[in-house]
Length: 99
Image 1 (cartoon, rainbow, N blue to C red):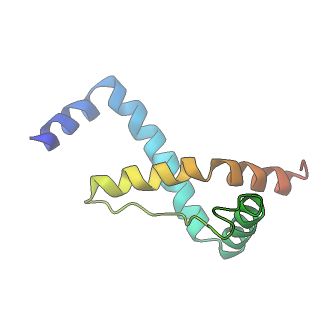
Image 2 (cartoon, rainbow, N blue to C red):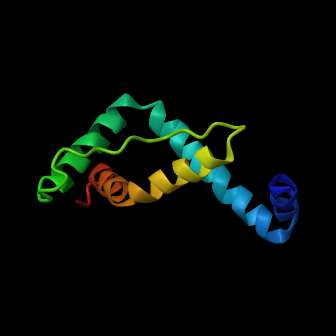
């Protein structure tokens, strides 16, 4: 039954917006996972950010790829991108020479 509801949502105008952002997020995840140097830099940024947090000094979040047939993995993968937002922004600023 939930699949019918989700299918109806994707057919609506709100669903097309979601699909556009979903495609962008999936493309970003694929690109990140294909670049080991970028992932290593992202890991180093997270370690530096977490070094000031005594409860999580060595916590590093991985980029998660969604599995096509599992809706929950899409949520978790996109949620992880949001969790990595600060580190990704720092990475972009470093690469642009702004930070």
